[in-house]
Amino acid sequence: MRNYAGHPKAYGGDFILARIYSPNLKAGASGDVTDFFNGSYRVRFRLFWPGEVQVSVRLIHSSESVKILQRNWMHDYSKATHMGTFISGGKKEMSKCALRLSSDRPLCEYRKKEDGEYYACYQPKTLPCNSLTITKFHMPPVPHLTKEEAQLLAKKNTGIQIRNIFKPVTVLDCTGLTFMDNGDDSKLASDVQSDITVRWVRHSHPWIGSRPAHIKATVTIPEILDSIAVGGGLEDVQVVIGIGQHFRPYPPEVFIRRLQNIRRAILRLLARSPKASVVIKLENIRELGSMMTHLSNWYGYMQNQAQRKVFEDMKVAIVDAWDMTVAANSFAVHPDAVIVSNELAVALSFFCH
Image (tube, rainbow, N blue to C red; front, side, top):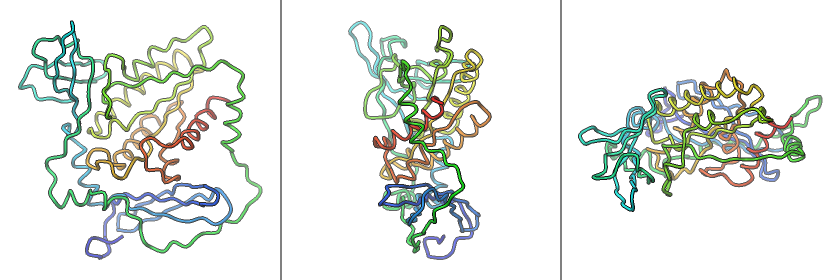
């Protein structure tokens, strides 16, 4: 790797994504990048299919950009706020809400001491705190970037295709190996002759997006897990947890605290119902045009590392949506139907066996 002046770098820290793919087969696989912290990197690929494959290596962020992201990530709660709407008795009032607010004005504080979760709004003029009904996300720009730092994080400098000449690789066919075919697993799942009820529940704050969130209709994932009734034939309940994208603008301690609370709730569920199955869906990559200081894929990568660490010794399965979307070169916060169907097939392979 070289620096801005074209000289070889003597340090690592660059954020790189790599993939192999065969356009004719519509097949792809992600690569495992090893950082030697001296400016050089090794990428390993598992060759899943025979034939010619193309190699793609992208520099998502230089190490200099990663340092900026890390600095703005660790303790900055100001990158994401909400406008809260309080409604009561036909009256409506608006007030700023966030995970952290200065205490120079009266606050409505929504906290649970047992799990450390906290949310607050500036107290409205006349309406009570319990009348908070809707929150609308707001993402202000980061005020403390220099001109040079902003240029480093600009879209044109993000996700650059490394221009080394990677010649196509020919993968020879092989025999004597046993492969797990997710296609077979998905067919098995679709053939299960049982009543299946799927319930999708939105987790509570933080929630980022263009649409308002009805706060009274949301609960935390631990509360959802604790509310699952077992017995009466429901001992084999199946749970899929997907969390992460909405936490990217916040310091890592917010996400880690939520993961720890989810971990404890999963343990409580498994104690009540040992036959229950839990799947953790990791984050996928999103658009390279996203606001890098708030939503960078580097944040998602780090949060996925946290998820693996928190749940590594538990009876849970992992659906690696990150791996799938890197392999498919799908830079979309909401992946297309093909990728989602593959995620479902992997999840069902854990449930239906």
